[in-house]
Length: 276
Image 1 (cartoon, rainbow, N blue to C red):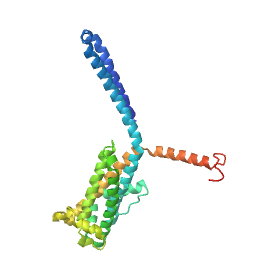
Image 2: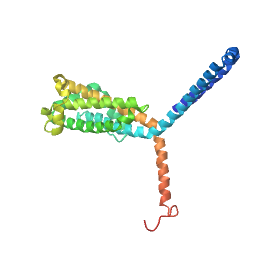
Image 3: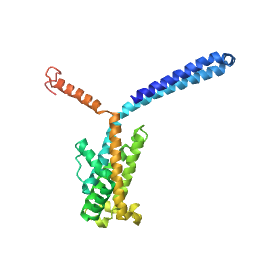
Image 4: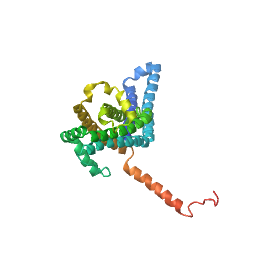
């Protein structure tokens, strides 16, 4: 609906400009008739500007339709990583469990994340436990690897892809925060759970260079920030994803597939050769 209104507005403005130019002929008639070349040039530029505006909107509208399914796919893949981030922090910290299979369960889990004081206290308890800290490290490393793969694969297409670009940049920002957290968890405290490859990379990171950020208080604050940031991106990305391709549209597509499947299942619908 929004795209249709943009096209209507562009066309209406173009018509108003043309009508205004035509009306000016009655006011400045002698001027235009005395400057034929200038009049011709301005008329050509006016028609060109209106044409470019309308055609440009049509082309952009077509591009949005072409990118909508791909954009939704990438956004929902990123939602999987951000949702794993905030759900993991909630459950590993002991704040509560999250039923990710229902909207009500996700909303209940979201309330845990938004309770900053309770979440921070639970995260502090988790960080103080070597075993739970190790489980946290495993989660962050796994989520970071998945997020890095998605960002690396889709960045060339998504950075300048219309409405997806700014939101994609925010996913990159969250990934950077999660990676920084993963690299600041001391290998000595979680060496039993950390893969040796990650331990070597963590020691070599820029984060490991600064002793101030290795403080548990900083770690707790950043984990709480990451969980809340991930929850925000979860909501925004899911909302935009369903704006790109609505759930009703997917239901209609699946209905078409179902009808094709039923038709192919009927003996008279299609004749396959006896020998393939």
